Amino acid sequence: MSMIRSILYIRGCFGVVFFLCLATPLSAAPRAKNVVLFLADGGGLPTVNAASILGYGKPRALYIQNMPYIGLAETSSASSWVSDSAASMTAIMTGEKTHNGVISQSAEAERGVKDGRVLKTLLEYAEERGLSTGVISNSSLADATPAACYAHANDRNKHGEIFLQVLKPRFGNGIDVMIGLGRKSVLEKTAALGVNLSVELPKKGLSLVDSLTAVANLPGRTQRFVALSDEEFEIPRAVELALQILSRNSKGFFLMVESNTHSESPKQDLDRMVAFDRAVRQTAERLRRDTLILVTADHSHDLRLTKGKKGEDILPLIRVSGGTHTAEEVLVSAEGPGAERVKGILPNTELFHIMMGAFGWK
Image 1 (cartoon, rainbow, N blue to C red):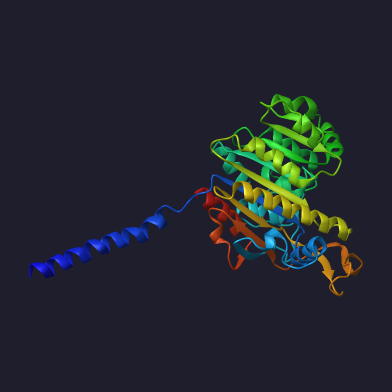
Image 2: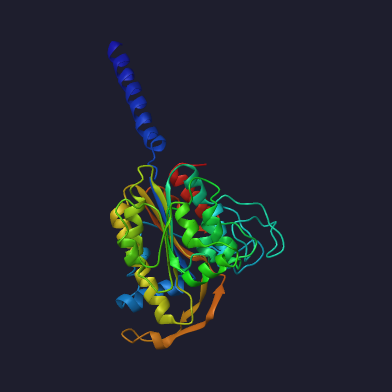
């Protein structure tokens, strides 16, 4: 009888231990210290595929095509099947859909007519919690994709009003690192509103420079800057410089990196996609242990490889319809803490919740 009791006692203990072993991983799921969102503007599946072939002579050669977690995201806006960058980036950054042309305001907004509710962006959540934040784009820093990270407007074309919101952040001390194009336009449009950015940005602790070279030459203690240029720069180099600054914050950081991959130049678009992919790879190799790296596009565009034999130059064979946006789903690739939620076909609003969840935020 005592032997039976001993066996039952051992089995009972084993059951408790087994239960604890099962429960521990669920309660101790790793959280991300940092999140890096890579967004290829217009970089739909046709562009991704063609970039792989142009860059490496074969399909599935890009890093983003081989990340551990892959899914698709639909890209519609609140009222249109085909989204623009303003509506789609608003969905990704706030978890709510809005209308085309509207920047991080709710669908109650009417473009250029009236405001909707101000939607809190992931970057603002990060600022509120003391993280460092950054935005990189090879479009104007006042354009729709970067703007949806830090600004709120009922019309994406209000570039002056949009960029001035850098000076009046709603949370924290505002964006720490900005690298992008549009220098002449941004300076002119803010000046037309009576603001001299060369004077006002330094008052907010932001050094104003005009190139990546100037960024690299900033004093070692400089931690906040705006790099506004009118010349094309290398996205991988820009990301490297930004990470050097943002990584100094022990609380972590959020960084958004945009590459514009839809124009009327297939070569430019595909070369940019290859460079963008290289930036993703370099970032993953450096940070994957404690960083969610999420890669997607805001929408696709009408670039098509409609014919051709293997080994041929594909550039003369590619058809582009003037950068026209299209409605099909786009690739989502991820790795790092929280990446396991990327699977299946997702609404674009879910990407916001995936990033918030990776940080452990509600």
